[in-house]
Length: 503
Image (tube, rainbow, N blue to C red; front, side):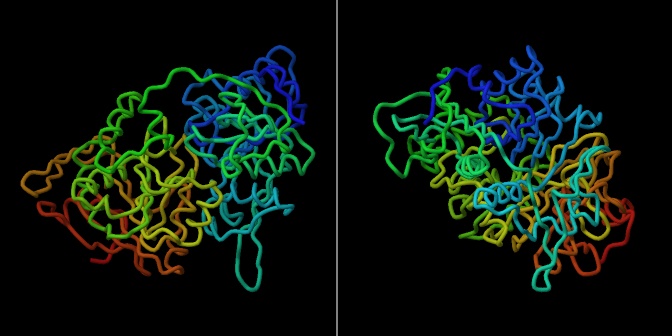
């Protein structure tokens, strides 16, 4: 039977050595007050310590003094397993100082491994990750010099095929945020941007004899409709009520509480970006790339658009009217709207459907998308892509590996080089005024986020769209497919590549 507790009382339920699984998505739907109560307890008593924390998509709030960042810095955590670390600024820094073990797995593979544990299986098989950094034959999932747990990812063979086997530690505590708890303890997610892995996390936790703690906005007197009760009350141990503060209507637009017609998507997008101080990459180079990449869209496509330069694709798809004829999706589970960005990445304006995250990754892993548009930090001579780790910094692979693993057409959107790049476009003529000092096309990349070898084996079509040209993936490496008017093929492209390409 569940109890109604304060956040501090609920934190007392978490023992030393617990394996906590947090249901959140990058910077949204994080049970912040539960984290901060846990932080207060640890600061005062030194307990609970020696924690393991698992999250499919990360659990920060873009503020190094809020949520879990404080108790992670103070030393409460021994091991962290996440798909993405982008919203956790101080945690990212101290991971690279070897303060504790930290592992980065593909977001969808963590989600599926949680679901497997809920079903009594020790782990989940996947084709995603083969020949990527996470593959034990390459680097493995450890981020720093002290992270060498071989049990998290193993290479296995079944019926003559290679798979990666993802196995998580046994989850013994769930931290969840929901909308409301009814008199039976059922938890609804009506005013949430997503439900994520909530049900699977709770099922796994209870199967392991652990504690499920849920932060909600309110208690309601009327029992939830059965289909709206995402977490049944029989799985819940503690409910903590934290009334939400005032939120601008632009945020409520992401909850699906009222219909947002297609024609109003730009208006709501602008309002959200103003509230969150989101700065889109709006350089001439990104506009050239977005305009060209958007030409790859076809009516009826099911699409995923990454953050950064690829967001320009949505802008041009809206300008040319194609956006009304395709279906956009986002990793957190939303389908059929317009993805928000910045601090509310993972939410969607005008979504027509929201499913559990593991179901969304079922679609992605099995080639259910028609096309995706992704960013890239580096591309090597084979066509492999690094999108998650730079020199002395990382964000994490997130859903990138799952999205690109089987999608029939993969379009990477990146500048030819960076840091100082200046490009102009007038009357359709592109002029490279100044090249950047950091090349994007290199002989060897620092980490493999996308495998050209796997893409060729899967028969995928892969394009690399830049501000001066388009390259494609072939069995012999990269091929120069298009050069934009005004660009000198030798001076602006071939002379700057450290390897030969087919023309």
